[in-house]
Image 1 (cartoon, rainbow, N blue to C red):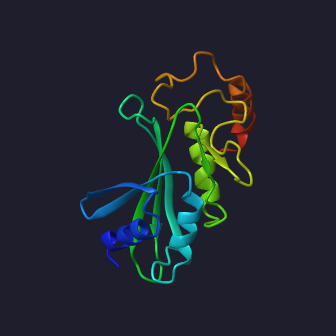
Image 2 (spheres, rainbow, N blue to C red; image 1 turned 90 degrees about the vertical axis):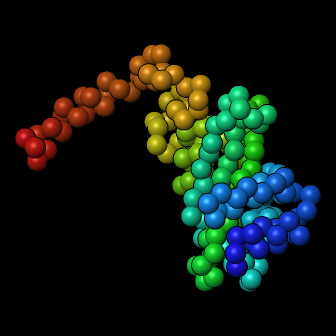
Image 3 (cartoon, one colour; image 1 turned 30 degrees about the vertical axis):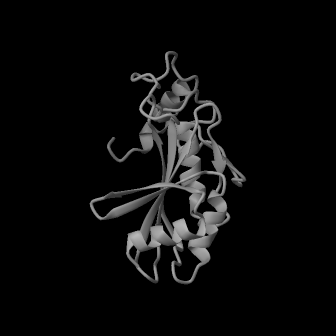
Length: 177
């Protein structure tokens, strides 16, 4: 099925949840409200005609100052059987950057949602283990937000010296000598 056909099925099934459609270079993004995200994703995965059984990617976007709602979560979905793809995009406000987790639909979303939380501070309701995955647990701030300082945090991360000490300690095991 062509991406516009998938988008039409989403619009037919959830007419009040679709905010718009973006088509660029043969790729289609369906803009949806976040309220029924989990229900929409379950439909896209379970409908035999669509069978979007693979979450290729989930990422965050920070539009600070360019859109009324600052953040967006982008879901790229693919059907292994039908070999078609669609992208869902959902806007989220800065005051309450919260959206439902899609881990119940695609278990592979676990890592992606943790990364999005870690880098942007977007909270995924119902996630089985929402904690930092790339940055240390005690890291302050969210490095991919546009207002994050370019040179990093103002004060040095408190675990930095510990990392340097461990690197020195294990240097003898390096193949580089």
